[in-house]
Amino acid sequence: MDTPDWNSIPDLPGGSELRTDVATRQEAAADLGNVVHALPGAVLNAKTTEDIAEVLKWCNEQEVPVPVRAAGTKHNMYGQSIPPAGGLRIDMTPMNTVFALQPGTIDVAAGATLRDVVHAAWRTGQRLVSGPTGVTRVSVGGVLSAGGWSMVWREGSVADRCTGLELVTPTGIYWCSRQRHPDLFRAALGGCGRVGIITRAHLQLCQAPSSTRTWMLNVDTVGEAINAMRVLADRGVATELSTRWHPPDTNIYRVIAASYYDRKPPTDRVLAALGSPSARFELNYLEHITQADAIYDDAIAERAWHTIPRSWSDLILPGRSINTYIDQTFPEIGPQDLSGDSWGLILPHRVAAFGTTALRLPEPGPGDDGFHYLVDVLSDQPAGADATWLARQADRNRRWWTRARRLGGTLYPIGSTPLSQTEWRAHGPRYFDDVTTRTDPRGILSAWAHPPASVPV
Ligand SMILES: Cc1cc2nc3c(=O)[nH]c(=O)nc-3n(C[C@H](O)[C@H](O)[C@H](O)COP(=O)(O)OP(=O)(O)OC[C@H]3O[C@@H](n4cnc5c(N)ncnc54)[C@H](O)[C@@H]3O)c2cc1C
Figure 1: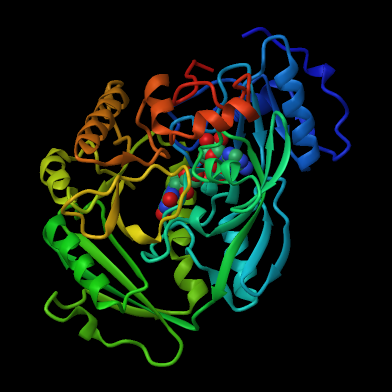
Figure 2: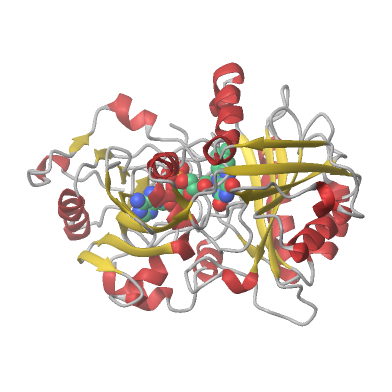
């Protein structure tokens, strides 16, 4: 693209910094997936909503409009937060203020992390109703743009428990909710940053439990794990449900159920007829909900996790076809998919808890069991892998996505499945184009493929 005259951006009274030096741009040319690289023309370290609005207006008014992407903590794996080369990346992390905490709600800037939210809420004896994502070092804006699946299976996505958003588009600043600009609200939640830049959000809170009890149950097949999660959900005792597997024991599936309680912990009877737990432990809520962060921090510090190329497949399957998908797909999983810090994860979520957002979910169908299942295979590049590994994994991700689609499934677009521009447009809900035609008429946020661009830096 033509190089815009970045010096002609008006003064930014809120103190946001526009950086065009090579070192800053190079650092902003990647994400945690370490696969897609595109050198932005500039990086905005955003400090205020008004500054972002000024800059978006400028990008929109250039003769050749400047493509823009917001970046939170860059945990999407395939360049989702990187604009096409020469575009503008907006770093949202300086906007991390917790504005207010009341019983039932937190009002927070979108660059804050869920970890900031979880800690602030805990200090008032509260927790996120939706639960946070497994790792909480991710930005509020990034998670709301993706949707956000926690281990709490009854409450829908993190986006479903958002009650208000401040959104900046090329045409202005909007406060939106289910009552005000409801079309913008539902398009921005789960909208992958294509509708506008989320600068502030209200998230629902509820009373935190004083304690949690976790059981781990090892089973030999993923089919048994799905069945165990269905039974545990029926029994109603577990607040959280998930199944995980990882090297070196990739044929042991760990069903993990956690119960929140205040007085008396539930007994092992919750597992009756399913087996004996391989582990059981109690933690206070804060220790419990930040467990994965500690593992993640170790992986970063000890094994330079953040420098390894990785390829993630993230798909949402309806209850009627989860077993078929698994029967067809899991025999294909081998050491090329699960080595080092790679892992697999299945999160069931109650269908009835999801509201209307742009998070693309399976349509209902006969034979459904009341759950959607997020199935993640999160692959690190194995040590010594040859140069073809990434291309083979991209083929794998497309093959699995195609299969999931045939079975009524959808893509959870945080991972590494390459889509054409047409496929990416079709991924959005039907009302998406109506909204973006009004708010982003020149397509600076919404116009391109997934991932936006990939060029050597
Ligand atoms: C170790 C690990 C564990 C994870 N566990 C889970 C999990 O349990 N459940 C789950 O659902 N996800 C999980 N994720 C995925 C993660 O929650 C999502 O990738 C989330 O989007 C990351 O937020 P981020 O701030 O890093 O977003 P980024 O990667 O920075 O951005 C993601 C997308 O959101 C857009 N965006 C970012 N900020 C804004 C904003 N303020 N306004 C508008 N658009 C914006 C970007 O343009 C991009 O399209 C995990 C990821 C990792 C690496």
